[in-house]
Image (cartoon, rainbow, N blue to C red):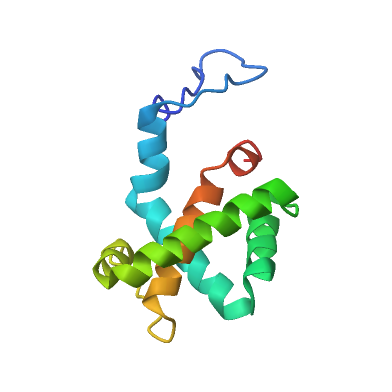
Length: 135
């Protein structure tokens, strides 16, 4: 796992890690079961705790990147959310397939299509540079 993300050898000191982005890294960030499940649970939290999309995006960025999103970031995430909502509203099977990943139970009080859309947004922010480089 550490090799996949170009972790430096533990035998020597490393002042600054190299910044890379490979196809395997992207696959791990977007498809690894634990990350998908974490994104889903985060999506459920956003839907329960915040009443509108603007506040959800702000809250998502605040808890993951410790700051509010820039206007460009906010607009990009709003566009992604609209696209995901459109996709999942046309195919509840796709939403159910995404939400079935992992062992944690799904919050049945929430609309599965909305949870799936927010799962995609959460997953994208979790895989973004502001979040990855913070930790």
